Image (cartoon, rainbow, N blue to C red):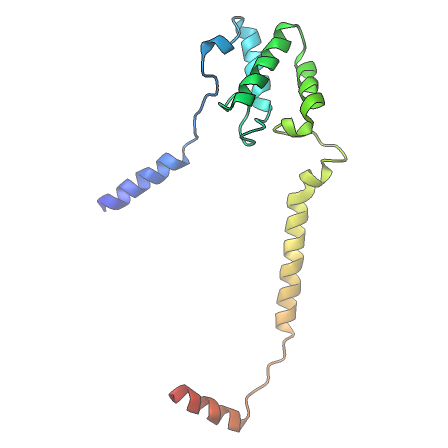
Length: 153
């Protein structure tokens, strides 16, 4: 029972959200709190190109640090959020966004789960139908005797 409790607590620990902060030093942060909040909000929407499933705010990769600096420099320079985002997209493509916009080129990405589900249902339907139409023949008397003989061996 004790081991189950430890295993249960270990699993609970693994399932809790992983908290990580990519900002290593307070020097990276802007002194103006509103600008810093904007930078953090924008950084949370931008993908780390090294880690790929983390935002640049969460990543501690060197490239993410450089991108955080660019975001903060552009905000200090007076760019709006959309201008900062557009600058990032212009330089790194839509891949830099954690949530890519719906466009003609990303339509397949957005509809892929539905398409995969439809293809999976179609394969299951065809497979089940194929198995249903399989003709089963009964064994002849000689075959049954031979099978029984083989089973005894």
